[in-house]
Length: 205
Image (cartoon, rainbow, N blue to C red; front, side, top):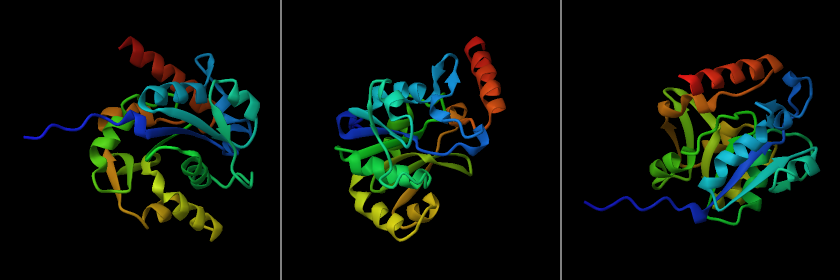
């Protein structure tokens, strides 16, 4: 029986998606909202760092504040807050490796095992996105960087929906029930409080 090749960390760039408007957070920059005393984006950056050769942040405001977290920051080309697909496009464009791993800034419990688990399932597919059972989490994804031109063309044609662009390519949904807690995200201030409490209970369990 052949052995599974080792996880190719050197061939993976990580991208923290932080380019949204965060309307349900009152317009505040979600990635910079404090989670246990540290910006949420910093938690995601720290989770991706051991999985990737390089980690960048896609943000459309407060670029200097994000840069102070210790990584490169790239804004969408148009700065129009066109959603996560625009962030994926920018991330793929800026990636210098064969694969690009994405995670959103509003999920501070992002797992350090996300990349390896998605990579183990990628095989011949172009995109591996996380799921728990039937529920998909498309912004947690490992994508072949060679799709950069495809997503750029889709956005130029007016596409804004991740699922419709994914459907154009060989995409697999990878059920990761063991990482279910890591996909919890923050949309409203009360979600942040609840997630901090939940994280504390997980640590004390």
